[in-house]
Length: 224
Ligand SMILES: *Cc1c(COP(=O)(O)O)cnc(C)c1O
Image 1 (spheres, rainbow, N blue to C red):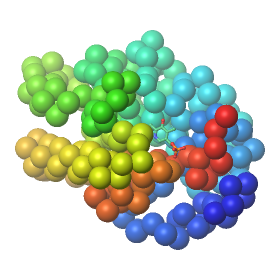
Image 2 (cartoon, rainbow, N blue to C red; image 1 turned 30 degrees about the horizontal axis):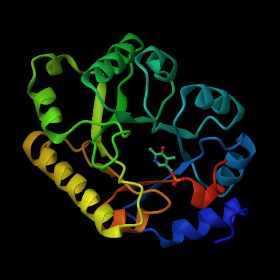
Image 3 (cartoon, rainbow, N blue to C red; image 1 turned 90 degrees about the vertical axis):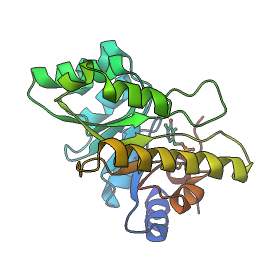
């Protein structure tokens, strides 16, 4: 893959994906022009990790882009993204879920989210444990959550060349997804996304059942 040709990077990557896997093009730190190039190639779904950046870019780009927030979200910034966000993939606490719910309720929206599960060895990665999700779902406060649609789970593997470790982490995320689906969401068709896999590990993620990959540098080139 030639790093600098965004259109052909997108085309080649998409050709190689099974039809069950959706591509989120991670455009964080990249320019609106770069995103436009991917858009022209047919890409509509983009991932960003900072609220400030997403707010600037969305006004410069076509309105039918579906923006996914994939980075840690502070509760005081929730209000700014609720009117337009396509999906918040990085919901990592009940407090955040609850803020999203109340801001969505205020404007009469139902917002799609994923629950981020911590699977990596690294301390720095945010997310719930499976047990914390169960506790949350079984709590009485959870019943008030009506303006949020829980569409599945998201996770990031350890940044390592040890593919065995990455595979076992993705496998454990996939097991949590199936477990939660069976126990709490078996009748909820919205709960169906398993967001895992980035530039360095998306092929492993797909083998382990990913439905959504979040790929940045392989499309747009390395970030500074
Ligand atoms: C940056 C980022 C990605 C994409 O990383 P690449 O290695 O550039 O593909 C995916 N997911 C999350 C949560 C990210 O922050």
